[in-house]
Image 1: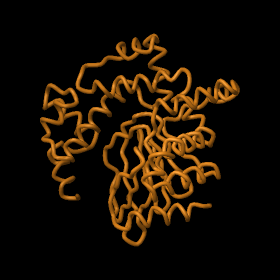
Image 2 (image 1 turned 180 degrees about the vertical axis):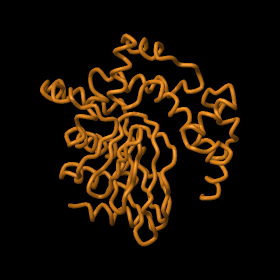
Image 3 (image 1 turned 135 degrees about the vertical axis):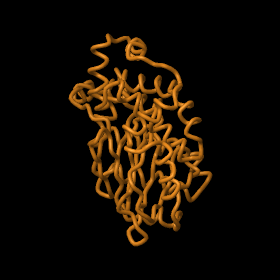
Image 4 (image 1 turned 90 degrees about the vertical axis):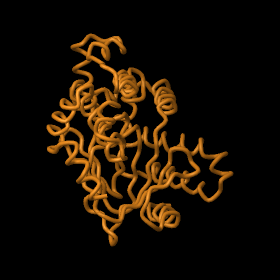
Length: 293
């Protein structure tokens, strides 16, 4: 069993460019046949596994390029830029995304910690917000076993939850496992803060609000948050709002609607901060986005 078998399985189900949902909840297959520059996005907790081509994710200026040798783990909701600048018809980007169920990841992580306290101690120095991990044998086998269920709706429905749990466990045990366990295990205050913030993007949320939500002092919260995400809380909130607004604009919302949706009361302030972040006004960025679509 190897990555080539997984590639053939995805290739057979998605011969043309596109992004498709599958019968397995939270599992999507994708094929990209032209270069796509990195654009604002918000990644939910997810795994992205590439079997052909390469993809790029940028967080706070740091570029994470991954391909068929390494998969990406995003353990918490993050404002990033993502794209596939090298994709082409001759060298398409082909892969799969698997959404992470925080409840199930937390359950498995805590079970692992209760069985082996040493697992928890080994996670103390892990502070990455994104992680790249080599495809080890356990991950490869678990991903293949999950995707082969797509040939049967009944198998997907009956066996899918168990195979997803198997894949989650392979990730938690792999090279990126410390990052995942830190996000989902005991003391996952920062991930809980991000969940709290993500549901309140259109409300004024202060650092004190976020710190109080997880029972920390402002100073300790600020330090812990930046260690976990590489961004200060204020930078994170601004990036989440602007990236979410950019995605809404790209999907057809007007600039004013997008600004209002993410909590901006002043269109001029939104335009200034948008231009400072992306180097273009919202209207120019919209024209360029539509033109390159």
